[in-house]
Length: 350
Image (cartoon, rainbow, N blue to C red; front, side):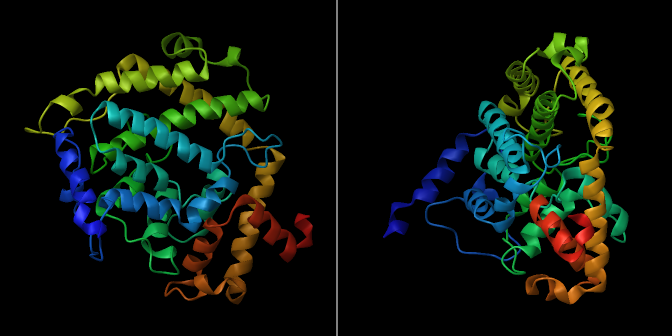
């Protein structure tokens, strides 16, 4: 019998060698609905597998990261962004002797609730949906309720916390204003890895799209963290590890150690982030594709709010308001599906 091999228990025993600040699987705060332990996988490994096998995860491959309807094959999608975040976060977690399985599960689930057309879709739904719409809160709603026809994935509380708290509020700053707190060190690692990933791959995509060139990047930032994509990521990751070393070697005494960057690298990352908003995101938002994306999301919201019966049964069965069900449906759409539905329902979008 597989249970007799005690595979999960051996993994949990090895976790005792992790940093005192790492979350140990056997000490997880558990799930909303208790389950029998898996004989092979720890609770966080199980969460990772549930996320990977979810429908929402598969749809990420056809959701926009920064550029809507790009013509090339090499632009970053929401799925490749997610994989980059997971790779960066696991590198940092391993170096700091944290729980890699928890880090990976949070990374893979952090953007499951992202809308079609990236942050453009998020902005429109936030305007239309009563109250507010944030993709990190929607990601938690996906894993708690929308997957498995209303049953959700029943993830551990640590993974759920990392998912809902991965995003800084508004534009905010890196490790500064609007950064927010995460319940685990592993969640902090994912949060900063998200920023490292998007800053660097959005620069590459903007260069690929002809919006900027390498020469346009802020000179002082390049001087600190490097002129190339790989050099920038390596500098930022190594700096995070070095500045956060207390996480690995120090026990928790009065306050929990945190994930840090050095002031110089934070300043360089902020400069690149500000540059992206000035030269890429705000400029790109005026393009024809973005304007059409806004119109599509608005049209679909208004249409389904008046014709709720046209939505798939799994969304119509939820015991929420019409606005909530419509928002859930649209948020789960891929770019291609949203465009196709708008064209089928209104020939003006062809």
